[in-house]
Image 1: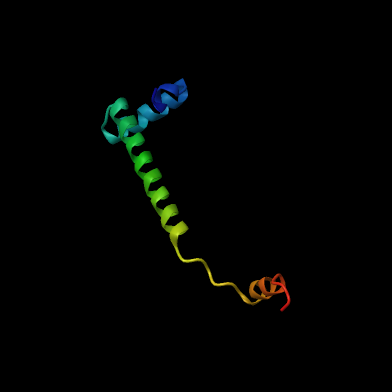
Image 2: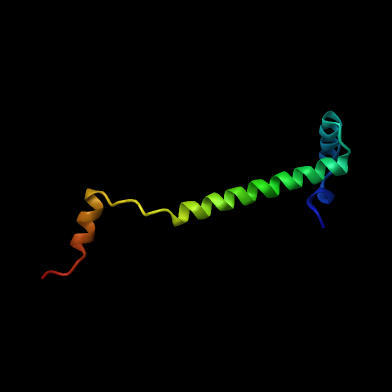
Length: 74
């Protein structure tokens, strides 16, 4: 079941106007809209993975101080 089957009458009318303005049928417009949304989601996931694998930020002065304070005394 695709997303566009869950549209209310008002949403369907709005999308029909947008499709007409773009020179497409409603079904083709909704298919293109779904395709764009999937592509954007894939791109966002790819960027999130890249950010997660990036090198961790270097700790600042206070972070290093706290880390040192938690180590046992020698």
